[in-house]
Image 1 (cartoon, rainbow, N blue to C red):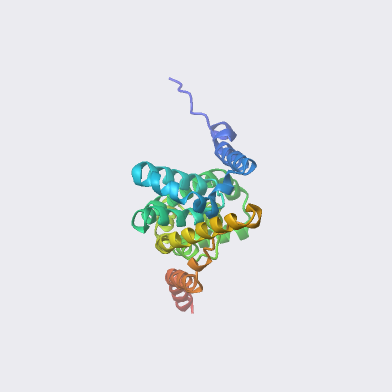
Image 2 (image 1 turned 90 degrees about the vertical axis):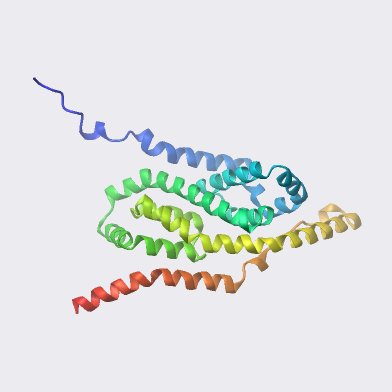
Length: 264
């Protein structure tokens, strides 16, 4: 009896909507957020102005507040919006580093994984199909030591977070490796900034008092509201992250040295 063969060829491939739809949706949402100016609410200034109100709400609704914070963080990372550092500081300040730090790590990993999967399905597959020898060689080298390279990129704060989310998708990093590298790699920085944010409450309270006094003595236009959080990011912290990142590359360096030594 003749049985019909399953359909093969172009018709069996994923539809353009399935391939490019999620990426188009993310781009559209990014455009909406920027057009409406919602990204501006992620600044530390808005946190400072609403510090007392947020503290009161959290004390009465801790679980709801933590859940809302986690969802907001996932959305910010998945849409590659600016403000992840401000949110990390807000989490440590409002919830304490013991709660804010771990919640931020999990939320950031989920958000990064979402944009990774979207980019890998659309742009990553297209690049893999059209890549030339140079790109293929780069992809092979990155895949061979994916975890070490990813840990280095996550640990060293010199690389923008959204770039590190997208680059592995274009270089063919497996999902499991990406999730593990992201989860482990962001722990030191996230916990450090969450812990440092415990000092931010004093800065905000001082800023609010000085701003209120300025408004009482002058016109509001002459009293800009600015929170100086620069002291939380010291040169020593950056150097420490860079050193940890170099340690992550030691397996790659040893492997390459061993290969060259064996060949010689």
